[in-house]
Image (tube, rainbow, N blue to C red; front, side, top):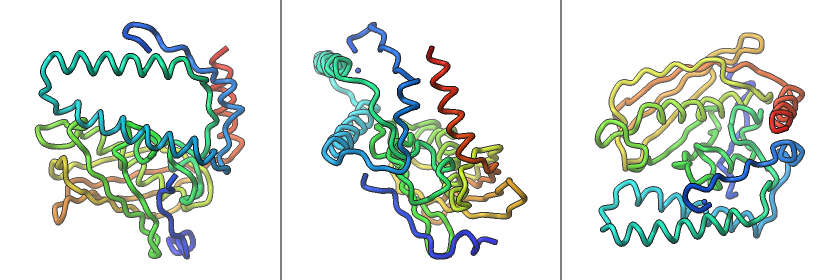
Amino acid sequence: MRSDFAAGLRSTNPDRLLAVDEPSPAPDFRALSLRWIPDDRPPGGQWSALLRLSAAIRRTIDLMADTDAPEADLLAAAEAAEAFAARLAGAPRGRRLWGFAESSNAGNPRAMFDNSPLMGLANPIAPPLRLAVDDDGVVRGTAMFGTAYEGPPGHVHGGFVAAAFDEVLGMVQAMSGQPGMTAGLTVRYRKPTPLHRDIQFEGRIDRIDGRKIFTTGTLCAGETLCAEAEAVFVSTDWARMQGLAAERGAGSQ
């Protein structure tokens, strides 16, 4: 069954603040739902600038998690960040949504995932996780979690491990050719997952039963097995995805 979905597939992740105490204006979700363009690409110059900005913010998050800067430096940085946030708040809102923010929703491992909170290069909270579908149909990924993701001292918070598995196994689900959604995820933690080290994920299809796609995965740090996971996804269709976008728009009224 795996070969039916995996034959010939190969994918890599494509290259692809307001003053303190001031609430950010709510985005116009109805307008955003009309701007979802999953199969197109954003303007190259604007998107390249967004990727650069996201990388800079990601770096800032990483440094903030472990800085011992004196009070004066922290206050100066806070002032600069507040000014930057105010500048962004004054810019136009509601940019178009290209690609997918979650791998399982695409039904295509070659889709654009730059907005994903786990592997999106345009999302500054993403570690990022880097995934590829190899010729054998196995999804393989690497990541390095910094101090901002710390749970047990020196190790990754288990919630982020689970979220990463959801993305990895969602990519496995995407090989089915249909959009899907997570119906269940079970993670077994074998050893703490270290921070500041390259870690390796693998995921594969276990079996398919109608609309249900059963997947399994592992997380290792070198030769050490840190966690295992099983997930089941329920295949859906584009009408359902479009319905979710419409519901999001209606909720903003």
